[in-house]
Image (cartoon, rainbow, N blue to C red; front, side):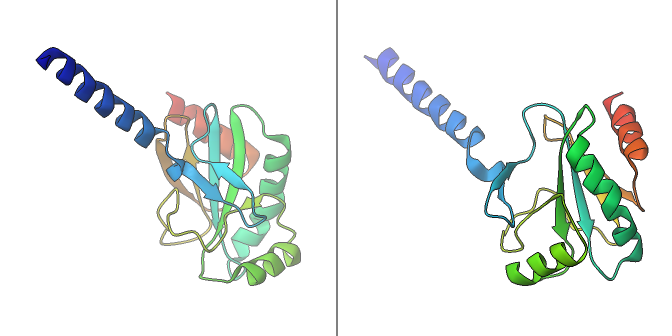
Length: 154
């Protein structure tokens, strides 16, 4: 009887741990109402902090747009985070004005996948195990992002 009770307790604990590890804590709400999982099951996610008062951020937007459309392997997602507190409607206006095509996290979410940096532009790379690399400061290119991934893989 005691062995059965230990087995039941062990099974309950194991189930609880599995539920916690599979929680939606890594699903983040996007500005468009969708969700994005960070980290992804495979590949790397690029997380970009930006603001319209940051000129290098604005210069970086076309490159990040291309990255988000092409997704050169092993990159699987590009996600932006607006640096300053803002409403969703104001962020949508900024997204249109600055022609941001990559996915943006909703400014209403409470928990972010990476810490807010001290300066901009700042990019983070997150591998499939959830390890965060960065921030990479300054405007990035496809070449610099892929080189950083290669460096961090080794």
